Image (cartoon, rainbow, N blue to C red; front, side, top):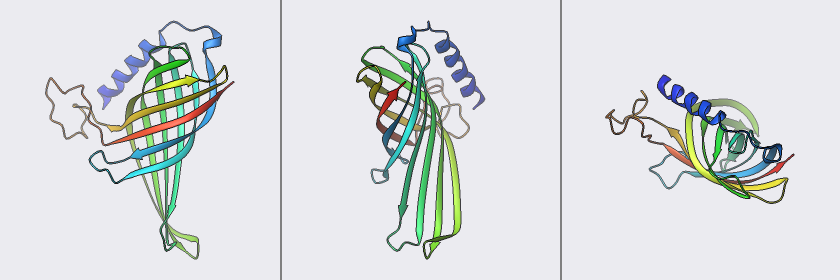
Length: 195
């Protein structure tokens, strides 16, 4: 895990050294999004829909950062169990081309919290909370709609495990040392208002 962190820090240092863009190409924005999260890559039945928002900041013409928060609340038919899920992700965005249509690569870290509440007469009597953390990476694009608005969509692999990660079941060989495996995936679509 330490070597993965060192690699990510080196990539971040290289990206930060890219030439800065003029002020008009930079931006800070907030917006809403819809996400479809699949926690098990081998199953087609566990896709869940989330609503949420994000804060995006383009730090230069090619480097951006995003902090996103999604939420899903679901009750069972009897009203005795409520499941609340809160994925939070921090991502770096690397624009491949910066124009009105900007494809980008993304990567970062996420915190995924699930709470299961036992209910009696619509009052919570017991809560079981679990949290998982993990790396994510993907590809997406942002479509500018004027100077102050943009639409975006992306696909992310979640819970990445590298060949040298202790949590991975993939045996370490020279060919797969840097090739990640994943446990889940996530589609997102949203809009951002830039200031």
